[in-house]
Image (cartoon, rainbow, N blue to C red; front, side, top):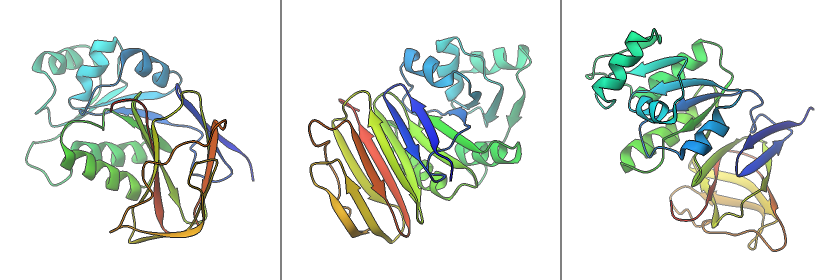
Length: 236
């Protein structure tokens, strides 16, 4: 099985399984805007899609999205009109709809053949929006990674593994069960390792772990379920 590598400015993730997508688009959503320099690095070589208010983050960074998706209820009217005037393709929806803008963006990205997506602008802001995005990405038909310069979340599914090398040492590492049980969880390279552990979703206690000095790489594997591998740097 070939090795997959995934790069962010603050880390490199490697896996022999699809937990680490090789080709990704970049979806910029409307939560906390990423640092402009981080966004430029993350956008390099990735197809950029703005999701409603994420358009303002792209505009501030001087980045032109390949397309714009949303209902226009949170993007600034000026940015939206400039996108229309410049010929950026727009998937426009009414504000009264069932799916969130991010859910629509994931569906459209999949339909357009995007195999995986890096989502930024998804942390901070309203908890219900972040909650919806985290679980929508866990169930999405394409592989997802959520990240900005402060936080990152990878998804492991049945039988998958990941090795993450941190170029910037994280403040904490947490393992978050996203199904009722995450079974057969093994983690090493951290201060509190796990061996074939079962983590219940309703009692998430594998939080606030740290790298074991002098390690800069840690590994996580999962036998069954869906597990979020979360890292935080500084004050998110």
